[in-house]
Image (cartoon, rainbow, N blue to C red; front, side, top):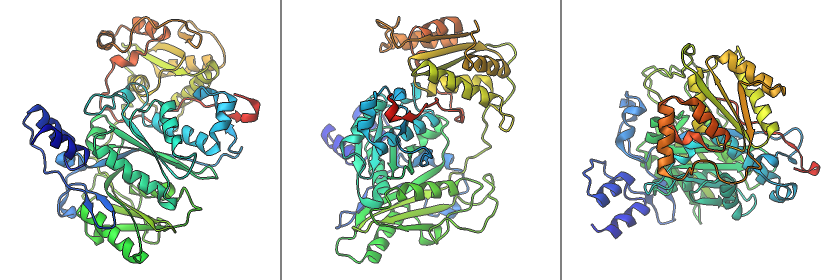
Length: 515
């Protein structure tokens, strides 16, 4: 098999990434037989996921079988946006570096898409160093594809949002009416499977401001980097009824997806959705509801399409098999989408590093925001999180590390070296109130002239920063941070479970008031 044929099969989705790399480099690699993409004469396709024949014999947790192939995908973040009580003209243009005219030109739904994708990526801890670490097989960084569902803003919007967020994977806008979200998800899975990106964002909003976004990654990558797995995607399918009777087309699509996932009808509780073009965000809403009900502790979605099921307690460490749910949508125009989701059962209890802080070790806490006002409000949010008695705060080391590798490095920066959470909360609260304290060092780099003292693109810079972190040289790291260097480049994800932390504050205001 020559290089051209290997690359053709890889891009066509019939060869796994690891197998293609092994053939191109001559490295022996024992990989499973690639699963083909099933297709029929109508053009419908189903993305297959290699699994065992009998679901109910699967007593092992997903971590034990995820190495069976690269075609299992995890939903690692889900962010729903609710209609604003103040109206859709409320927007923080300054946060995204836009002036009033540019923000107004985007349109209300487009602004909401920008906000919800940013907030979802920040919640997922995939800004900053972790975003840089999402690379393709060729080493391209920030390889995240963006798939926008619905007719919001036309086809150019996905590209514009990718530019604003600096996402460098493919960008697509998908408009298939009420099935737009499932169609966009299906396309995103194919993009992941072809190796064109390391993660995919799928987002949708409606005219009333409802909707949201999700992040999808290969499950092996998600488990390696400590991402939460909200649900596992077993298979997806998309098609059109053509001249076929809708009921027959729906049954064919469902059968196709079940075959790709190697499931029987009795394994699935199906939530069906049928809508016209007017309900643009139906797909995300139904998908989010299904994912949430597959989370351990919640009942499965019911067959009536509303997620109704008899309440019962779910033991995530019990011997029950993982639950399966399928979501189907069909638009009045005849387009259809289908996705099969599986509950994720971890092998052991999740730990979030809430142990007491080390008494003899300083930690470097870094924050950044686009303006001093944003920075002060973000500090206030973190002070509140650290003193919230209703929810045990994470260990200081885990908190500081998660912030450094999972957040974008913006122009207004803060650095605090502390040993205790209580001390950090006090200093952040004082900073938010405008009080100066020598323990809290901050800088406004918006008017900075010239380059930072280090060239961040050089490999040697990353090695130097990594050495500073290993040596715990916090003073040197603080100075570099406040001079404009993104010092997080020297750190690596630890595989620790993702921490749920406050996001960077957004200060929304009516667009009529300017940016």
